[in-house]
Amino acid sequence: MPGELKVSLHQTGPIPLKLDFACPPGEVLALFGPSGSGKSTVLRAIAGLYQPEEGRVSCADACWQDSARSIFLKPQQRQVGLVFQNYALFPHMTALSNVMAAMGHLPQSERGKRAADLLSRMGLMNEAQDRRPSALSGGQQQRVAVARALARDPQVLLLDEPFSALDALRKNELLPFIAKLAREVKIPVIYVSHAMDEVLRLADTLVLLEQGRVAASGPLEEVLSDIRLKPLTGRYDAGSVMHAVIEGHDEAYQLTHLSLKDSTRLKVGRVDAPKGSQVRLRIHARDVGLALTPPWDISIQNILPCMVAEISQSESHLADVLLKTGENGEGSPLWSQVTRFSVAQLGLRPGSRVYAMIKAMSIARSDLAEIA
Image 1 (cartoon, rainbow, N blue to C red):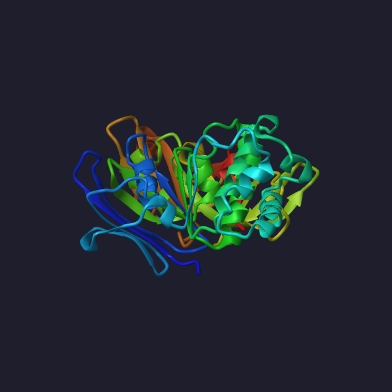
Image 2 (image 1 turned 90 degrees about the vertical axis):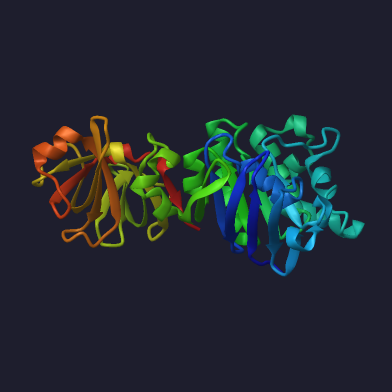
């Protein structure tokens, strides 16, 4: 039966590790951090491809590693599905045969139908199933690799930067399948990436790694909206992540109307999702301007009443202003990055009432993700 994955890894060298986290079934936990932070090492340890000095890895009722009891199961003894950056498909086999090759635990008579079902779930129809990898696009090959990982009926699915070899178009084709898949298979999914747009669209929980240790972890929206974590989440990508509901679409002007939890409304470029859908959106701090009074006769479509919650001034010319939406600051957190001169000129301090200005065009499609 599917169950929670629990990971505790500790060692001083050669690769320092000090981390503890858990991922419940049906959720996606993203490991995010700079190169060398230990992301892939953690995945290899979960899979049994690497044994740290101390650690415990368990899923549901199965213990895969416990250094205190000298337990360490080999990779083939762990029910883990692993997808790498490279597809590692057998070139002489069709897509269907590649998936069937991972089904040694099933009777031969059941493998064909099961493999076809998995490939169909990944959006690969009969004509693609009969092709060899060389006749498939990169995105199609990666779908086959995911289907093959699921063919083992794993208790955990591990994805090690699976989109890094794909162009933006192929990646955008594949992301919805992975997002939907995580909910359907109802097993823990651990996802390694250095691309924030992928994390935004896939993850429920975010674990930030820095030199082999957990620098921060928690619900995606909370971690990405923490102004103190900007050096780890990316200074250019810094911003707020919010939940919203699609209220409707303006077909004439190709806009979508969103409603935040405090009934604040936003206009963004047309989103291809039905009315009532829940979405997650990211608003970059650099795209949020501030005013003391509601501005009129301007092109900016989103003018939100807010209250200043916190101001962080760096040694550079910039300042980070943490806002709360709503007349009395009862709503969602929203970052704004302005100059220190602007903070002084406007006389901003915690408790100040301001109006945040956000261009509809500044919220790109990659900054929006429909929540399954």
